[in-house]
Amino acid sequence: MKKTFSIFILLSAMAFAQFNVVASYPYLGKIVQAVGGDNVKVKVLASPKFDPHFIIPKPSLIPAIARADMLVANGAGLEIGWLPPLLKSANNPKVRIGTEGFVDASHAIALIDKPTAVSRAYGDVHPEGNPHFDTDPHNIIPIAKYLTQKLSRLDAAHKAAYQHNLSQFISRWHAFLNTFDRQMKACKGKQVIQYHELYNYLLKRYDIHAVATIEPLPGIAPSSKHTLALIQKMQKEKIKTILQDPYHEKKTARFIASKTGAKVVVIPHDVGSINDTETLEALYETIAKRLCH
Image (cartoon, rainbow, N blue to C red; front, side):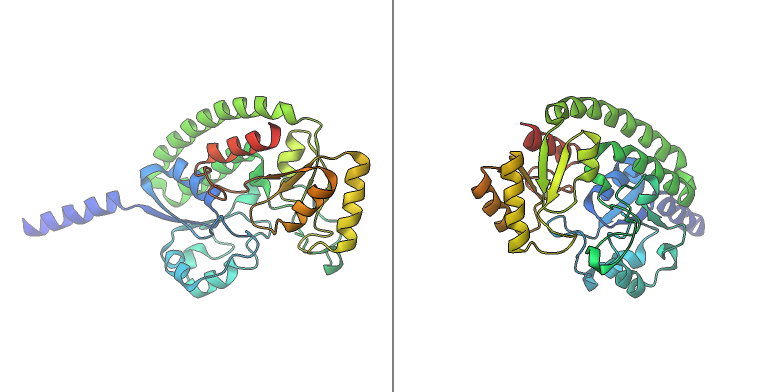
């Protein structure tokens, strides 16, 4: 009787054991949680307060990766500077690059801005294309579908639950997109400059024209010469909006604004990157409010 009871307890524990998922960035964690529901336990590695290119690979992150059943990365080279050392130290065969458990979200997206040549002369370019596809909310659904497909393979016992959660999430997200798209119509045709080519997917979706960047090249700090040329261009073309991300220095944007009469608009790039953006919906609602009003 005692043995039978012990087996029952063991089987019950296995039935209610959560599938461990590690996500590189907060927005990915939110999508995994939405489709995974109670069957997954999600750990996010990177803080949204910092440049997603240059996250510090803290040793404290290693245990979560070592226990992970699945790791979800943004991909397209965004984590190249910090995730590989953590993966090596964690030494978890389930989530090594190239395995089923290492999930690259960029595989669900048609990447834009693919360079014709890769060289340090062009700055910190991403050979696969622009990795900042999460700025377009229409990319959330293909990512959710891709992650659900992977979850269903790796944790087949809960496939039905994952598919059900995905269906509910897609229905909710389509309703959200209908509202968001209406809000963004007010921005159509708007001319802006941005610090880094961070919002290209968003701008392309809604026919907003990025005329230039404060960075002369990706990852290269603005020089005085480039800044002055940018001021002249904005004055000539009457460009009145500067898109500033939360993590780059803001002094240059403010200086340019003071010389051109432009407005500096801080746009969040991920869930939690600024106040009141703790959900996916709140992230994009804040973008629409700040950019189009």
